[in-house]
Amino acid sequence: MDWTPWTDWTAAPDAWLGRLVLQRGLALVYLVAFLCAVREFRVLAGERGLTPAPAFLRAVDFRRAPSLFHWRYSDRLLAGTAWLGAALAAAVAAGAADALPLAASMALWAALWALYLSIVNIGQTWYAFGWESLLLEAGFLAVFLGNDSVAPPSVGLLLVVWLVFRVELGAGLIKWRGDRCWRRLTCLYHHHETQPMPGPLSWFFHRLPGPLHRAEAAANHVAQMIVPFGLLLPQPVATWCALVVIVTQLWLVASGNFAWLNWLTMILALAAVDGALAARHLPLLPDPPPHQPAAPAWFTALLLAAAALVAFLSHRPVRNLLSPRQQMNRTYDPLHLVNSYGAFGTVTRQRHEIVLEGTDDPDPQAPPERWRAYEFHGKPGDPGRLPRQFAPFHLRLDWQMWFAALTPRTPRPWLRTLVTRLLAGDPATLRLLRVNPFPDHPPTWIRARLYRYRFTTLAELRATHTWWHRTDLGDHLPPRPHDG
Image (cartoon, rainbow, N blue to C red; front, side, top):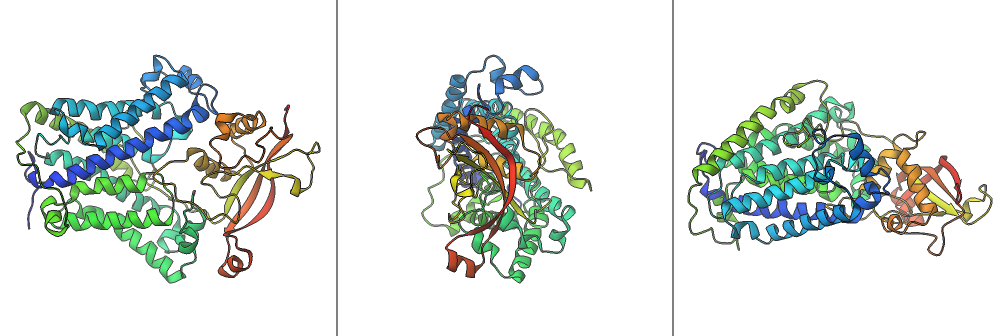
């Protein structure tokens, strides 16, 4: 059994392929993340956003939320930062980092990390997702993976594997310790229907027979609580375990929309893949670089310093993994360097949806047929519309609408502001929605209605041609007038 790359901590020449795909894939995820900021940030957290960043910046200091925007914030500067990050990410994905000297390549990765950190740290609730920290932690580690001018460093790859280990094991343990339906293997009776943003295949996953749901849950436990330890074992075990991680993540991609979480986890798992083994079994791969010398001493020193920092900062995530009161998606430092991860420690049994509806009728007690719904791109609305696939793109407003529905009798402050923007007919806000039912002028009244959603049965689907059945539960926000 081959113990490389872990026993040769200086360089892993056969890992060139894994590093190549890992870095190019990570750059593509950065590209998606920056484009999401271009599309959404102004409306969500801009100067007139639902939770304005300038007010947040006045309330926190640089040490609590390091960001370039502490020196100055404007929507134009934010857009410029996001477009710059997108351009740099696209360049790296196209191979720019490998064409530069080693020091310049490291600076390029560090710039991506710093630019996105500056956005995340002022994004407030809209950027409080575990995959934001995962992208930042992965971006920090990418600084120390080198480029084509040096052989892939084993220590750098091992740091990435350590990240994947924590992502997978954290997700597995939080389920096992959390909702007892995971231990009973029954959570997937509900999860595909109640997950934040179902995909086009979620209805079909939900309608799988009960025994298959139980097998699905059991396989998830194996993949997330046993297989991660194999990532740290010698080759070829590490490679086969990485493939299990990738297949598991592809299953999650098929069953729902989780932004770039699954895609990024698959990309990072490539750090454990034996490049030579992959080259022997996969056709049409590029030829390895002709010469990859050992890294210079200064690079090795920086790499070992980064490894020591990660080792030191790992004590809190490890304690969290071992704790019976494990927390999900916890960040321990404002730089998001070493974090805790996890998802769905609790599975909701019923799906509530908040539907924003407007009317031109002067009477707020107008009959239901006089109210028209604003439709979102990702969250369920029209019962006859099949859910779409948006991941790895992140629809933050749609996700937060799901969280808002978890407290059906306690409206979020930002939701009231969203209604105000819609009553004013704000063009930027309306661009985040799929359907504006009042294209010529704002409505007279807007309300937020609460509905109970469930997937239709096969018989109902055939009879009604709708994917969802919904029940009206009353107002989440009572009607507000145009001049309110």
